[in-house]
Length: 138
Image (cartoon, rainbow, N blue to C red):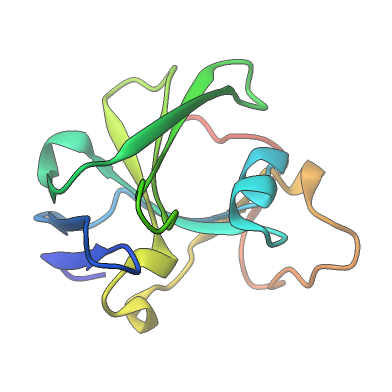
């Protein structure tokens, strides 16, 4: 996915721009992503935190992730749109950007399915993508 790319929440109160190409483009099937997205998985782009400029207020909710580490979920406090994730326990400060918040989500090309041990049995997983049962080593 080419940089820069932009996005934001449904009401427009939160906007962001990322200046670099993503480190990873993944479909995450962990239970936390299922619950926070209301769907069988969340499509995310992992990028260095320092490469993202955010305008507007983001509300953060901390939760213990499937990995055992803490994860913060960022969303718009006005419209509730899920926007970001900050996983702890990574070798560098990364930010997960929800693909559904992109201005042009059609650019997204997933490279991997992660947390497939938690994937719902009724969900279709693209057989062309590599499958990782938990979080891959970064």
